Length: 476
Image (cartoon, rainbow, N blue to C red; front, top):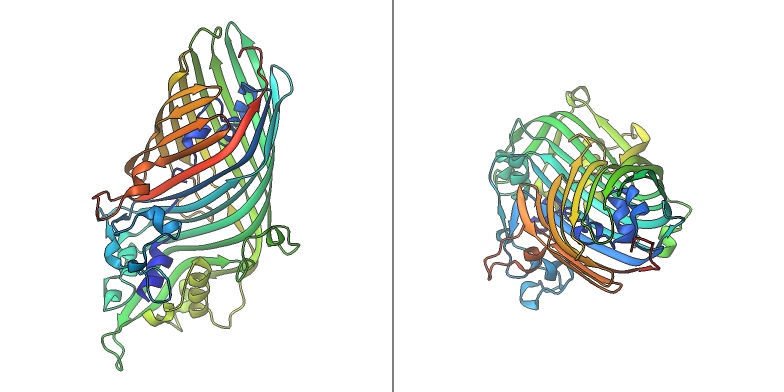
């Protein structure tokens, strides 16, 4: 039971973007279509006439609730290479509660767990002043945002051994969102103004979205009492008497794996639209002078409409029939869907959903960038991504971050060392590109940390891919 609840409730907060932004690629002049996810105007700044992205993948975890200190690294955990001495008889990982250490600063907790695959993509410079691009992407994101530290501490104790008494009667907010979807996008960018070595670029992206899976539980607050069961006094239960919350979920991916057949199914529960828009100022007088790029964009505007079950809970609905939760209710849960269904069955057994459709917003963000590069290829970039969704939004979020990225960029070689401030913590990454092959991380120590080496990471990040440009524009 402890293992299931730690993975279900806390595993969400050992989360992803988050270097899910692949800063080593997206801030490189030779990043091609990967730059467009931060600012679509950069399509018109491509140094290559044609850019092809074969496949680029990213896995990201980040949180501000616990530090990881197991005897094996997070990289071994997520790649299923944990040594046998840390596994149970059935082969599952024996994950002890002591493998994580709480960050007890009393502040709201956030976490993201995400994976992303950027599939085939093509960018073409249609002239010296404009470009078009077609991109594809598949994303899976699960997040906890703005959640009470006291509530997570109680859940971490697995609702066992009297831990229910520690759940706060106030300040018990819990905001959980997950979304798994694919997108097909079209980008157009052009030069608005140009003269005297300076130009202003503008770009926009429109996205068609297919949604496969989404859950949300937005708890604005609950009132409860903890009571000892007469039959088992050492196993108290939590009785909820008032609740202001929304709970929704889909079941399409239940008992299904991610496969081409699943992705192309006619029963996909979600459809939606999205958009990005951006401006970039470029100053470079000639190829022998340094360049300055300043950009601003709003990305991931929009959302997905899902067919699913959506429940709205108010205090009036619970006054006459309080709901009881016991630790045993969560013995066999695994994953966000199982948790959502367990909570729903307890809160509203036999009740029809209030709605059979619900919305899941995209991680809308304001992106500001500045980059200065010498003719030698050495330079430094500043990236600021600001989450534009409210804490209790029914949407996944782009975690707010600031990154400083020293870099070296040439046509066949790129190196970068992003330093990222995210979730009140700092991480250092590294990225390298040789020809068409990229490999990098926005959290290098997160890959290696364990209890033996004294590194206590709050997440990990790794990405890689194959992408390359063909032909040169005149200023190259």
